[in-house]
Image (cartoon, rainbow, N blue to C red; front, top):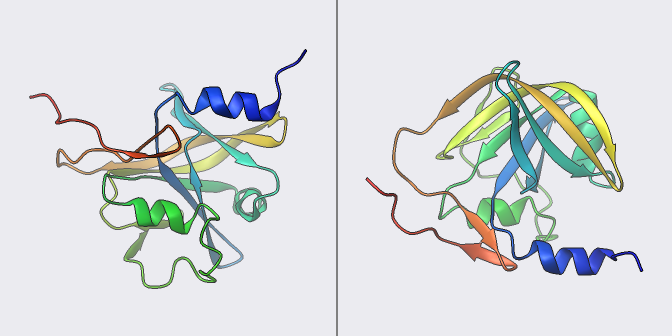
Length: 165
């Protein structure tokens, strides 16, 4: 008998992931979505990938914009993750009131993230109910501090121990 989606979800809850918010700007409007299915893919060329549900509004915006920014969240940025996860229907304008800058592409970058990757759309791969967007990293920047990443495990946010010296 094939595995169903809920069984897969239960097993995947045992895998710790970092949390990102992927942003883009399409038709002059900012869009964002919380994503934990993100990874680097290649150093030559510089590629990373994200997986986005085809039903998400940001899915169409990424295609329209031809790119995206991956914002790497730090411990203490749970509110940012929640704002863009779809679990805050009370927020009509999730970007309102946030400290933002712009990546060279024009997509939003959140203040105080651990780093960001500004990507042009390199390829799309069908992945069931998601699309795998492969981005060519055109620009990137990282925070110089030793702050820790926001981690998700077992259905909730977690904190790593201290960074070894």
